[in-house]
Length: 129
Image (cartoon, rainbow, N blue to C red; front, side):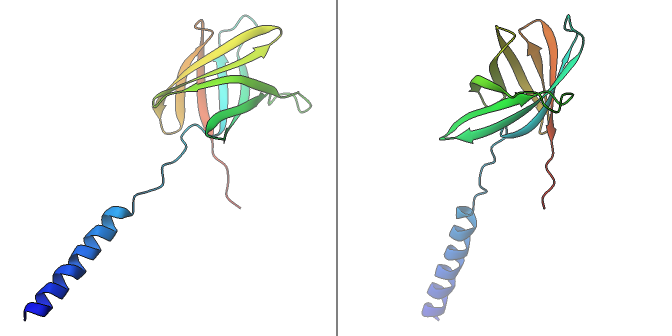
C-alpha cells in the first residue's frame, strides 16, 4: 500500500511539473509586415509597407511604397522597441524621419509621423502555404 501511494505521488508530481514546464514560445510582436498610413501630410495621405525582421536579436527592416511597383526600398536606419511602443527611423528626400507607434491591440498601432502627423499601422496577415 505504501509503495502504491509513493508511486502515485511521484506520477502526479511528474505530471504537474511537466505541465508547468511547457510554457508557450514568446511571439515576436513587431516582426512581420505592417501597412503604415500617414494622414494629413502636406503631400496628402500616404501609405508604406514596413517589413520588420529580427536579425541577431535586433529589429530591422525596410519600407516600400505599395503604389509604385518599381519603387526602391527605404531601409530603416534605427528601430527602438519597447513592450508597448516602437519607433522607426529612416531617411527620405534628404530628411531624417521618425515614426512613433503604440500598441492598440494585437494587429493595430497608432502614433505620429515626426510628432506632427497622424500615423496608423495595421498588421498584414501572411497566408500560410
